[in-house]
Image (cartoon, rainbow, N blue to C red):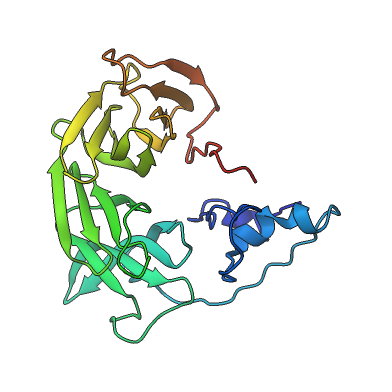
Length: 275
């Protein structure tokens, strides 16, 4: 059984370390297993219920204290090597919103605070960020990330901090949710708008390919997920969840259900690899 250490942590940013578990049929040459793989494959070792003890391995300040909250979101790369944090950066009485890239092992020598790199959104508040887990460098490491802001911009950039491309979602009221996924039909970035719409962009070309209008436009999109079949699932601040199918010309939702009484902050769907 999993329990939070204290109830007052319930509203703080958190995320699963979500690497896909290794298959029994895969070669065993690589012994570098992630914690997700260890836990996911525990049933192959022992059928008894595990008692999991959690302890802090590293702790460090990732953003300035000048505003509250200073760090308001985080993301983990699929290979569990990198972390993204969204927050503020204060320098010479000027406050900017930045996304910082960190090693999961902790700060490194180099950055101002030990980060690998940072990416700034001038004159805007960063609302969400995500790794492009399907883009790797020559060493096999995830090397691109995306972020969005309340002005309606979505940026894609290298994890070294270099800009790649951006687009502006006009009349969106700002971007409130972000997802980067690889489906059987391509690689896409989906963005949820403050006015309830969903924008789909080609992750390679940086161009908007579809836009879906939400019938519940009075509520901002709060979470997004794209399945391998290309179906996009979105939720809003009122607890509704709906799905769009980019393969169809019809822009109306495939379904629209009331999933929760309040805001939905995350959507997870099962993948083909079973745990």
